Image 1 (cartoon, helix red, strand yellow):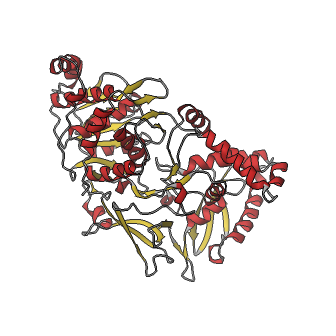
Image 2: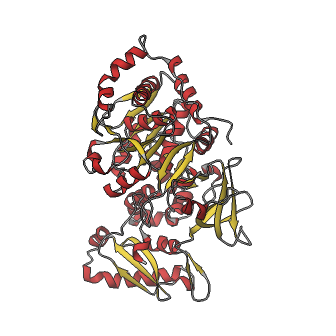
Image 3: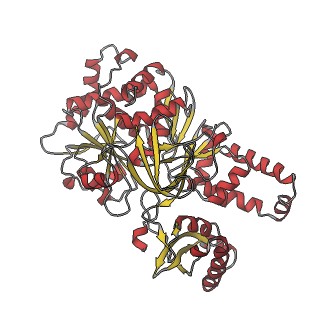
Length: 552
């Protein structure tokens, strides 16, 4: 059990950083200081109290990243209630299932998402409140939530007649092992599972972030990952708020153009991102630049290439704001070609490993110590790891982890919990990898996606797909087993093929050439027998993972 208490960490931070900027909405440019943020939290606490919300009650939250979203999240956990953040990308049926399954009493929703939900089918919800406006969207018969909200300013003034100040901040006494959050996984095989995270689980992540100096008092952060996801939640929200950082909430889809503009304006001191962000910048900006005739020739000249790489590194660092210590990549496998290039030019990035069931962090290494194609070292003093293999350093096996960050279990799903969580605390991750003597984890793929060749060799389709996805004309791919033969399903990159002047009729021949090239890059037992073109993008989860089970 952690010595620190996550609620008390926030209590101290809001008092100590009262006058500093806490949250800024990038779109409206409206900002809150920590003092103003604490007042808004106190108002919500009063609303909960007046509406008879008790410690342990569930509060559901769905909408884009905004200061009001953050306020509801922090107000809920510091009150002692349980927050249920829901990815806004979930379809309405899944969102409604999650709200009902979590047994939430209150729902906070953006107006746009609310229009897609059916209030009559939200069985436990007493009232739904808007994240966009000071209003109740709907309430069950006999409820008084709208009346309380209407009178909230007066009720708050009566409780704090002289104003609300630092010494008025007193948050709930919650034991570290108490349930604090139910975070529903994006799921690829039906409805999501509700990961039960305790105060101790969240605290393990935040304390690691504090002790590692990821954020610090007065530092700047640009939040563009979904805060409803454990990765963004822990390191774009909880850790910055724990130390007095200034968070700017992008609140829109981070296309390369929008993101680079925001990064240049905010100049964050740490960048948290998923591989797709860097992969898009690499394919859209860097590859066209280094493929030009003169520059391509220059990169083949010894010593001259280092100077060119240094200039590319400088431009890339400036593009991300120029003041960050490192970029932490996580949430999905990183394309090996992109990773190798960034490492070659000494770009300050590192790759971490985590999962929702660990709120989320399992391993991380500062960029100067990062080992290419690894996922960092297991968090010292917080997590431990073992590989189910006779030779964990060389022969991949399932990664199992234990420690402060490991979840309590799946909400109302003991069967799923028992499948992954042993009585002695070891969590079966479903990932396959190796573990070096210094605790560095290297991931090969997912246990459920691993294929077995006819001669008994383990095949990790993600590794083949990564090579194929780097080839011209391939937008995304999926390798499947068809009667003992490997077949690659490919969704073409039509933008690239159009630029090449390639017609639709020419695509099969082009793909056959790619298959020949690919088979030179892989082991004999990994060779692809055929490439099949698909007409539309692969169906994906809200986390943008391909729903593999649909294509088996």
